[in-house]
Each structure stands twice: as C-alpha cells, then as structure tokens.
Image (cartoon, rainbow over all chains, first blue to last red; front, side, top):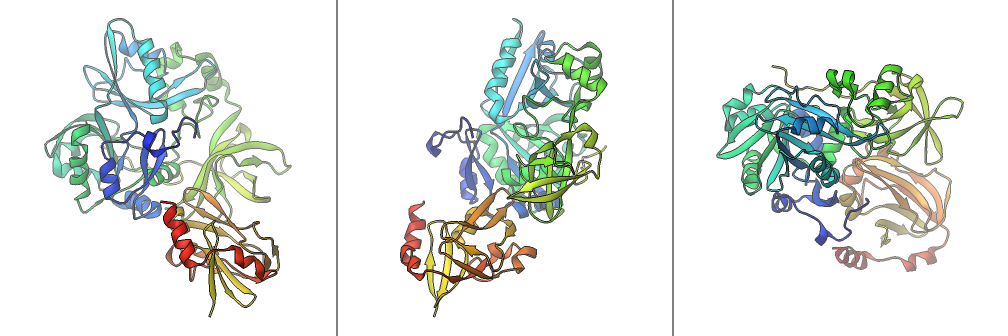
Length: 373
Length: 125
C-alpha cells in the first residue's frame, strides 16, 4: 500500500490499541494505522455476529472534521455536490469530494450538528481532505481535524437495544439522524448510520474515554468485537463502495450508481468540481456502471480481475470481490459497459488461466436492514 | 512410521517410503484465517519442486501452496472442496491437500524436521 510505513513502529495507534491487543487481535497496517483485521473468532464469525446480533468496530482511524462559521456550508458545497446549506439540524448526508474531471477524491458523511458541520472522512484521505477544506474556507469560517476523539461503530440488529440500556433516548433516534447521548457517563455524539447494511450507530467520544466505553459495550451479552476484515465483507454484501477500490479519482458518482447522493438543488445549479461531466452523465447515461457480480462455483474473484463478454471482448473489471459469509458463496462488484449492466447478464472472468462464468446481479446482495421510524 | 518434513513456505510433508502427503501447517492456517476455498492439483499431474501445486483462499486473500518436493499426484482431498474449513479445523490431519509419489527422495534432505520448523516459526515473531 502506497505511503504505508513498513515498520510497525512507524504506525499510528488508535485509543483502543491496548484493548485490541488484550482481545488477541491480529493487527495489520492500514492507512498508516495499526488496526485489527480480525480478533480470535475470525472474520466469518465476526461477520455473522454483526448480521445476527451486534458487533463493535474501532474506526478511530477515520478523520473527524468540524467546520463552522459564516460561509462554511457554502465552501463545502464548492467541493462536493451535497446540499449542505439545506441539511436540517440533526440530519446526516452521504457525499463525495469530486475533481474537475468528475472523479471522486473521497467519500464522506456530513452531519448538521447545529452550530457546526461534522464530517467523517476516510483515513487514507483525511490529511488531503483537511487541507482541501481548510483552503476552501472563507475568512470567517473555521476547520478543525478532531484528533482527540475516537470513533466506534456498534452495528447489528441488537445495537439499538444495547445502547438504549446506557441511554434510553437512543431508541428514538431515526436512521441517518444524529444526536448527543450519555453512554454510562461518557458524552457521545451519536449517528444512526454505518457501513454494514445493518441498523447501527457510529459513536464519537473523547479519546481518553473510548476504552472504557468499548469495554462497557463488549460486556453486554449481545456484543462482540469485529475487525476490518468483517467490516469489508459486510459492506460488500450490502453493496457499499470502498474508496480507493470501487470508487476513486477515475470513477464518476454516476458510473458508481451514487446519483441519489447529489442534492436536487445541486443538480440544477452545479457549482462543484466536475459538475459539467457529472451532470452530463446524469442526463445522458454513463459509459460504464457499477454492478453486483456472482461468480459461478466457489472460487472468489477479487479486485483487478477483468471481465469479458461471450465473444471475448473486454467489457469491465472487478473492483471488490470476496466470499460472502451470509450467502456462503463468492460475490463481487465491478464496472461493466452500461449496456451489460442489467441483472442476469452472463459474462466471463479469467482466473488462474481458466474461464469462470459470472452473472451480473442487483445490489445489495444482502438486504439492508436500516432502522425505519 | 511416517517421517514429517516442513518447508519454509509453511507446508508439511508426511513421507512413508516414496509416498508423501502434503498440507499446510497450523501456523499457515492461523495466518490465513478462515479458509473459504481450496483449488487442488489434478490427479496424475506431475509437480516440480517449488512449483505452484494448489491455491488456498481465505476471506481476505488468495495464497499459493507450493510443491516442496517433486512427484506425481496420486490423490487429492476432495472433502476440502465442499468443506474448506477443514483446513482451519485440522490442518495437519483431515485438512490434507494432496498425495504424491516422490520422484526424488533426495529432495527431502533440504527440508526442515519438526524441531527446526518450530524454531523457524518462532523466529518469525
């Protein structure tokens, strides 16, 4: 991985590093951090734990950014196609920073926290995102990378019941809404959102309180720790994009099937990087589209595998692929020519010198079970 | 009584006369994590020492299994196709990969015995 220090001593550690070690985590370098890829249970069990009950993830490596002051929302809108000015207080929106050619520089969540906007960005992009935001802010606005906060994700069908035990007000929070909570004496900023396809919460807390809260949550019978391995297989089943793989500087939001995240007013007005290309693709349709892919047999097809049609012409490429613990079969995502993007289109992939049949499929692979209030 | 040999690629080779059984070590399965797919060689194929003999895939990644010795494949563990988790559950027993007839038993002298492999793994930290 580019930019990843090769010695573990150069790696950054999250506030939960000691806890990961105590839990027997397998620690790996990820985006400059030493992160748990799995614990003793292993990825399959951790994945199913999240689908069936609740799993706790440390996502403190991600960037938490606060922007505030006059003109902050307008400045964010010059970098990304979300309706930041029209975002109601307590609401969360998904968006992405775009470049002049209509590609994606990073994807992120924005919360209107009342007196400021709170952003959660990808770990590998956070310094670049912060620099981009800082440069865009007008004189009266402020931009701060919150390095004294940890971020936990409690995900799964039992997540809400577990958190409500610590603060009953949690139960009333709707999907993609944010609020404050008192989690056993730890002041937390809660978002009812996540990256698994399940109901769940992302919990921002002061770094020095993170371990106590994590231990408290892991003490609940429904909760087990899960690592980045399960986080990846969960988001793949849920059909969610991983930055740097399924979306990057060369893929547009329209190709990626993310047009839903472009605000109505922004479609009409433009005014974000690459608007011309993105809005043209929105009107005319893109050349390629992101699709789900089901390989025949049991062998996983992974990122980088090329896809061809019945006549041997190259028609696309896999951007994420692996084994689905819920479906007990390989699944993948990738880009194909738009004409072949409908479900049930038969394609071929080459794996270790032999041809494997692949069928396009609608996303998600596993139904998302977000909280509907 | 079979003799047990190990490679620095974390395969074990159990040898009786000129017959060998090959699999991956407990350390290897621990490093891989949950095994979800195993691709085995064809019965009757000839493997050269050091050549790719099988593929083992975990949730996260694909890894190659090399032939630690040369020989002809006489059997493969078909049970791994439907139940690859056997590799995790019993790597040095039910989780075996394939059997060979050795073409050069002299190659065994370049491999590690159990004690040497144990200290090799300890040296990996």
